[in-house]
Image (cartoon, rainbow, N blue to C red; front, side, top):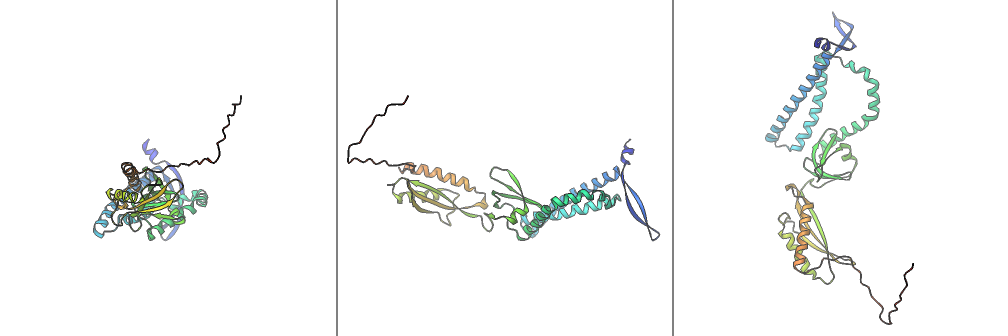
Length: 301
């Protein structure tokens, strides 16, 4: 039973062979066994190619000191080319001509009409990203309204992981067609700021000194460039100050976490120094030059 299933003929294809210098038309059967062998050769070859690629990646990184992002990207492109070669080799081993896929010509043409444009666009964009290298693995980027760390640069799409640990596949064409903000392109040193409003009448010099002292106490805030405090505005309800400081994102620091820490420290320091953090309020002025008129209005039924 197994031998019958193994030799079951799926279809036949027209092919040519050369006998004594003459081309003769023949028909080659496509059996279940041939398809299975071709599939096994393809999978085994690709698995072996991936393992060899990983070994070569480590050796190139150790010996040539190439950046891991460049090695990873080049490896993805090479593996894609290897996969195409393995498809041809696996078909040749079991003597299945490429013309076996001719009957799919109509479906392929329709699919190509709808999908090939975007596919080729993303493939070409991937080549441009590989050549220009506007970002690398581990960079923090903003693109298409998304912010995340680049975890993979693929042939068709790249992967971003946001602060919630959710990974999003972004087509490579998006990085070419839209504005991309790379927070760590040439340096991981980035400036952050925290604003706070204090009540009118507060000693602005004391407020400035407290904010600088808070920035100096936080272990993640860089000393060079030094933090600075700006007296930014006389708002309707508050005197507004801005505390600006620099963080090195390459060390794994989270700007959101540090800003939260600074706000906690500001609240505690202001409370200890009896400085009021402002809140919206309005002053009501009554005209006392004449007696106030008071009316009692009966409630309506």
